Length: 394
View: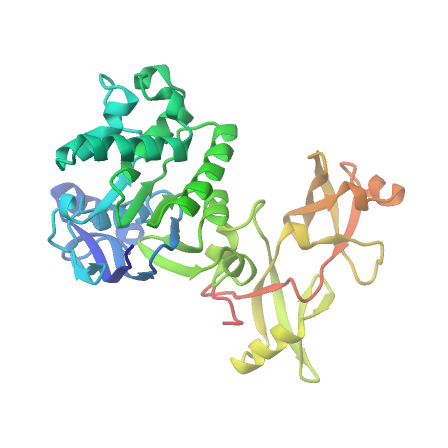
């Protein structure tokens, strides 16, 4: 349907007396956002979205993801750069002429209209024929499984049903680009899981480019062809869910993607006989061939580092000489796995152990108060610059 290209897009909110005062009171905290022009919400966003691609913007509250989406929609003025949709510059084109549709967090349904009337409304504004309107609404209702609700009012629907209606109202227009701003955040956990599956099915059935905003990394990982991770108005990394999970560009991405969060340690990168190793608590971990190659190509010298290891990549060990040791503070039984909170290396370490892999001897090690030994392979260790937080492999 359409390619979407953002070239050096930025958003600056003009300075107000309040923001100037804020800057004076807390210069250090605000200097990354306040400029002479005003408050910088989004900085130099460069992103190319292919036709029919599903892109997810993800990041913590205030990172600029919704502002970016609203600039694509035309609901926010673009302060700098170019927005191209289907090869045409859209900076000053009114929202109604961009051939986009948007689904909001709050559903935004008309309470006095039936479901059918809500879905018909955007088509009536564009003066489609009655037959075409009926055909499109019926087709969208079938795709979303809401045929039986067409004559009900929104107040008679559950949250998940209302969100389906909101999505239906957007897709009846057959837009080139479908924008979704945290559409599942008002739903409970069970409904969110169901609606994620519905959105995946919907994506397979309609020929539209998706731009989706969320703060929920689970949504990002399950929905997106590619994920755009943002912080403080700046893109930190763009990649497939697998790429950002396995090869995080920096400490922020490493800590944001993955649940539970990656463990981080103060460690040392050493090199002996041309081989890189990570030294932690007297234990040396030889890095994998791929990591050896990446570090060598970038000419990385031995230095202090931040070492990252995901909880699911740590294994229990009874080898006293080659293990890192700690005390189990909390043991959480999660059904198929046990989540251990271990006081090790001067900080809380989370270890995920599959219950089916626990021998009777190792099961005793998972009790709160027990001394535990653990290790990990060099292929799952992530090496970050201690000062900049940048992944030293890339």
